[in-house]
Image (cartoon, rainbow, N blue to C red; front, side, top):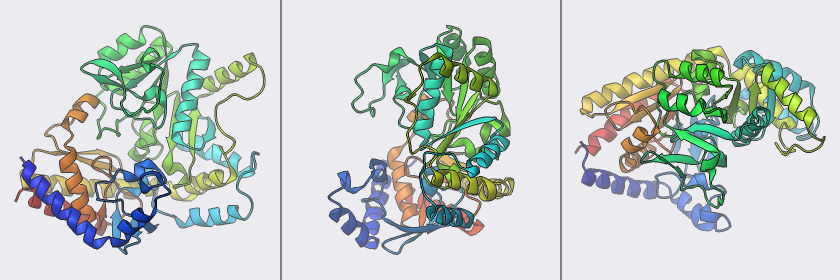
Length: 447
C-alpha cells in the first residue's frame, strides 16, 4: 500500500532535514574516534537517523539533545526509564547514597526493606539482585539446571533475553539454527536449547513431555520481535504443562512489567516459579532482580549444601551494590505505584485510540497492539501469532522512515521496532503530538 519509491523519497528528505538540524551530533561522532563505531556501546548505533542523536539531558518524559532539540520521549531508554527520567525521589536518594559509599560487598538495612517490597509487588517471597537482566537470566538458567539435573532449556522463536547465549537460537524453515548475531560462539547451543514457536501448545507439550527440559524461559507476551500476544489459554497451558512435567517456569518481565503493577504474571496470571525484572526497576541505574518461590529457594539451598563451599560463579561483586539497592528501594517506595500505572494505562489507551483512528483514516492495513503501557503499531493487517510471523511481517524500511520523520518533529520512538512507552509523567499533549505526527507521516508516505 506504500510504494518503495515513496519510502525512499521520505527517507531521503528526512535524512537531509536531520543533517541540517543536528550539526553538533555530526561533529560529536566525527570526533569520537576512540569509541568503536563512535559510540561507547554498539546498540547506540541502532537508530535510523544518519547518526545517533547525542543526548544532553532528560527529565520526566522529555529528552534534550546537544543540538538543542527537544523530544517527547516514548523510547524512555528502551524501558530503563519507563517510569520517567530522574524522578525526584530517586535523584534525592541517589545523591544521599553517593555521599555514603557506593559499593561495600555487604548487606544494608535498606536491602532488607527492599526484599519485602519486591515480594509484596511481585508475589514471590525470595529474591536476588544482579547488575543486569542478562545476568539475572543467566543465573536463573544455571540455577534451574542445577536444581533439576536437566541440561536443556526451552525458549521461543524470536525471543530475546539479553546477552544470554543459551537463548540465541531461532527457527528457520522449521529447523533450529544458531542466531547470526551471536558473534564468536563456538559451541552448538542447539544441543541444550529447544526452540519452538510461541502459542504452539502441541509443540510445547511434545517438548516438555520428553522430561529433559530444566526450564521454560519466556516473556508472557513477546516484545522483542514486535509484540506477539499470548493466544487465549496458552499461558495457562504453559503453566499446567510445566507442573505436569516438573519443568520450572521462568518469566522474563523486563519489558512486560508494563502490563500492570506487579507485571504480567500478577496482573493477568499465571504465576511463574521464577521471574526476572530489569532496566526499569532501578529507574535507569544498572540493576536487575530475580525472584522465586519458597520451594525453589529450598531446592537451591539443598544444592548449595551438596557442593563445596566457595565461589558459585553466578554473579559479580558489583551485584547488589549500595547504589543499586538505594535506587530500587526509592523506585518501589515512591515511583512504581498503582497510581502510576493508572496514569500509564490511561495514556496508553489514549495513544492506541489515536493511532487506530489515523490508521483507519489513512486506509492502511495495519494494526495496533498494546501490552499495558507499551504500545506498538505493526505494518501488517492481523496480529502475528508467533515470532516467525512477526519477523515476516516487519517492514524495516517503512519503520525507519517513520522513526526518522517523527524524530525530526520532536518525537522519539524506540529504534528497534515501533515500540512506544507511556510513563507516569507522559502528558496527554505529548501523546496527541505523537498521534498528529504519525498522521502527517502516513500522509507523506502516501503522496
